[in-house]
Length: 179
Ligand code: IMP
Ligand code: MG
Image 1 (cartoon, rainbow, N blue to C red):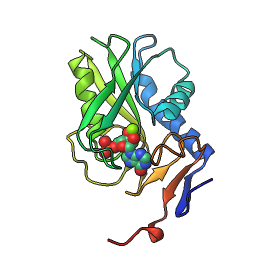
Image 2 (cartoon, rainbow, N blue to C red; image 1 turned 120 degrees about the vertical axis):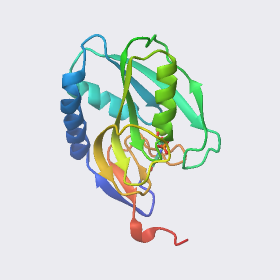
Image 3 (cartoon, rainbow, N blue to C red; image 1 turned 90 degrees about the vertical axis):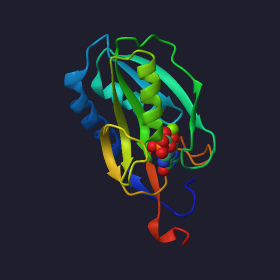
Image 4 (cartoon, rainbow, N blue to C red; image 1 turned 45 degrees about the vertical axis):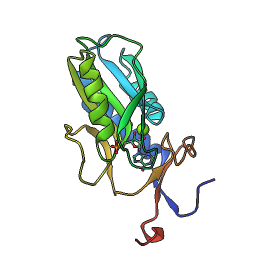
């Protein structure tokens, strides 16, 4: 079930073609057997899977889990909940997240990966909200630029729900509560 007030933004086919387009753009910079994809749990799990399957190259995979102190929709100050299992010292890392919003998550995870000795860190996101960033980040590889409204599905949750949906739904602008 889709919650009231959400409309479909991207179909399964749209998402897969976005993942393929990103994979095609990244391919020239991938070093088989050496490049490490680090996905930000929980949301980036779905995109990571499709992305590396579309790439069809021998890459390493690891995970980070972060949470924000304020626990709200927007990222406040972040903390690391679970770190890497592998050693990324000297490695070229592709940092994968589901969505770029304020940029704080990518900035925080990039700092962490660099503190672990990563030789390079490049962000990769399926979605990027069109809004000012609140953290200084290099623009990642982006699948789709989307309006600055809340989205769910394909790993993206609303209070822990709706991650399983195969399609991505966006909050309908007309149903937005006026402030
Ligand atoms: P940022 O740190 O503000 O860039 O936010 C990125 C993180 O917030 C992502 O890893 C998502 O988990 C979460 N997030 C941001 N916007 C949305 C959204 O519209 N739906 C679901 N999760 C979101
Ligand atoms: Mg997240």
